[in-house]
Length: 406
Figure 1 (cartoon, rainbow, N blue to C red):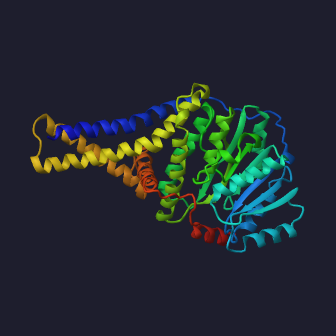
Figure 2 (figure 1 turned 30 degrees about the vertical axis):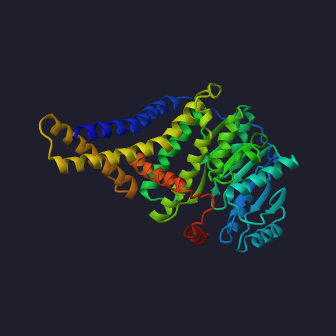
Figure 3 (figure 1 turned 60 degrees about the vertical axis):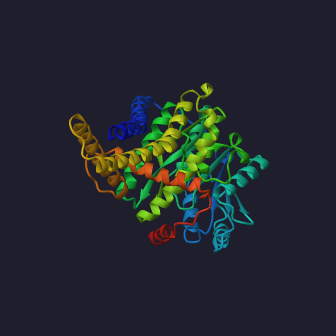
């Protein structure tokens, strides 16, 4: 009786884990590829517009505008799109512009009549920018992100390479819990390796630039979040590359509590899952080259693997229930059972490492995989219940901390 649960448990664990090992091996190979920054790049700053989506950012909007005004190689054009803020974000923004009229080449404020979520706001802004036809590049940034010096001009330089369609920066999170730092290090490593091999489907909306012509408003699912990943993927499907520049960073603040960080990850996870599911017809598109492999594997990691790990937990519980009913196995089954018990204990410790930041050595990268799978299972569960997270409540504690930091 105990043999069947053992076989199922082993099969599920292997099916969930082996693809990660395969991708890790691919990353080692991809990281040997040199991603060369263009020599003597042309910086078409007057053809670039900064897109700043905001909603109830009165505590930090002035500091954000101060930061953007220091991104000289311009000055740049600025469009702020407000998702029907209920505080004084709009008036503070207008006041800052009035007092700093030379900070940007031009300024436009778009006010949404109702709040529809960030992706809807970004889609509307993209539509208006394309309709005006003034700008070749769009730089999107978030209100809570502080950019590294000359970040925008450095990213713009990549477009001297005609194969590049989108480029983004990497995050530096203030106040990250240890488990979040481990997750971030793993995720950044993925994006760097994927960029060298071909393209990454995931960029950060806190600091990214793309060619305006490659992404239209209709490319975005406004009922989902992860608008940045939607844009990065759309660019690659148009035939150009989406990459990260590991020499450019932005600084933001992670939610200070475990609950807040989990809420953020679940929201992000759902957006990425929806994006990957929507692109399933491209998983074996040979015209995409290596990117089809990347897209297919990311879908496996974000959707299939969490379900398989969930099945592994159920099979393990079933095995123990079977033993409780039928008695402890004997002979060779006893040895196999002991091996499985050790595997389960290691898995539990690795999950606790990633979940609570226990810092038990030698368990990485399984801690990130296991804790991440839990988050992605929760994202799938919310989606299965019809719960969309594309409109979320702000992390007010983060805004308070950023305001004090100033």
